[in-house]
Figure 1 (tube, rainbow, N blue to C red):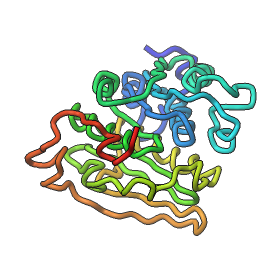
Figure 2: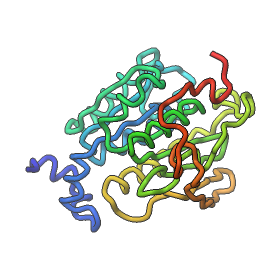
Figure 3: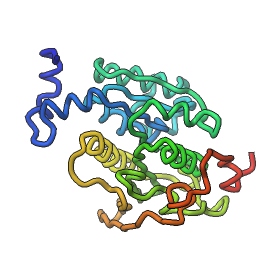
Figure 4: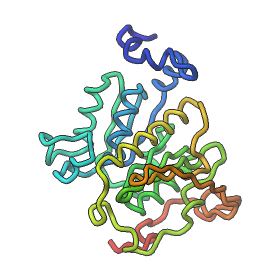
Length: 266
């Protein structure tokens, strides 16, 4: 049953062909885990909450830093020094009190990833480091869950949907991690402040379409946005039969040490 407040809140969805009351109810019954509440996670989390996704999990262990405020719109000056997960929960509950928000202020690793991801219908990777990307991908394949992925660098962003309806996974696109030190972080290379809003909004759209079972997703497609040239292009890539995770004879059947896999010393 819907309350009058909920009917008013979701009115533009309920009258929308392809969503309607049944679709809105499906969103209310859905659960999404967002890994990372930074630049990409901010718009993703806000749009999922606004759309009425019933349960949202947030994996984030950092605190709000002044350098975040140029692009991480979940936070403001008054929240400096506070845990991002806690601030995000308060912000989302203020935006939509009908959404249940759960926080995981921890470092996701091979020991806890499966238990953290398992209760959710869909996972969204909003991280900015390679070990976690491979970890989240492998965990989603092992748990048979779709994964929405996004990444940003300076003026360019990319996104895709992995392991959805028999589609390829992250390792089908990037079988091996780049050599350590060849991919600079946002802190090292910089990032255009509005870029996470563009890519994050598209990621939220892919997540909602996946939950609703509507339209064409980016499964098997990598969408690349050039913010300087205002240009989108897409690259199609297949599921690899020899993929070590989702291939016909997978060799990766348990989670591994992903810092070691990516050649990172800890």
